[in-house]
Structure formats: C-alpha cells, structure tokens
Image (cartoon, rainbow, N blue to C red; front, top):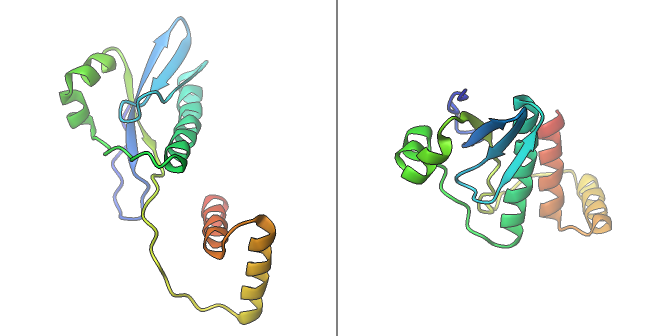
Length: 144
C-alpha cells in the first residue's frame, strides 16, 4: 500500500515506511529516519502510532540541530540494497512527515490592540511573538 504523491506545494511531504507483521504484531520502521520505529496490534495501529513516533523523532532532531534527511521515493529507496533487504515481505506505506523549514521573515498587519494581547499572551507562555503566532497557526491548521 503506497499513498499517492503530494500534488501541490502546500501538501505535506511523505516518507516511506516499512511495516512487517510477525505473530499478529506489526512493526513499522522509517529507513530515511534510522532508529525511528514503532508498532501495534494491527496494520492501522502500527501506522498511526508510527506517524506519532515519527513526529516526535523529527521534533527531537530539530531541537538537537540534527540535519534532516533527504526523503527518498519508493524507487530510489528500493534501489538501495540495504533498504531493499529490509523491505522484503513488508508493506510499504507513505507516511506524512512535517519537516521543519527555514525561518522566513514576513510582514503582516494586525490591529494594534490584538497585537498587544498577542504579545502579552506570548510572554505569559514564555514564547516569542513569532513562536506564539506560528504555534497558533499550526493549531488552527490542524484543527480547523
């Protein structure tokens, strides 16, 4: 099972994961993210838990300043003998991955009173204005 490739610049990138089943348990690994593994009692659970583990793994990499890997597509991944061996008897799954990008300065206009409330709330949260607004935007995107 491989999800279709993203079809727009705003779509989240995907990484290929290998899911193996053994004695009714499912394990998931991410060859482009060595050491990032998870599992579950079903294929769906393994993929769901794997996506959460991947998000935490990427966040930890970003916090430690580790370089993010270049994501390989299915064909390129399977051309790697080590990955091809690991893919034997596996279900291949494309899992969305939110890779951090570089900070970009933007100019926005906000009501001055709203900006004061944003700054006060950011200070109370121990965040910069930029971090606060980015977190608020992420939350809105995730939950509508």
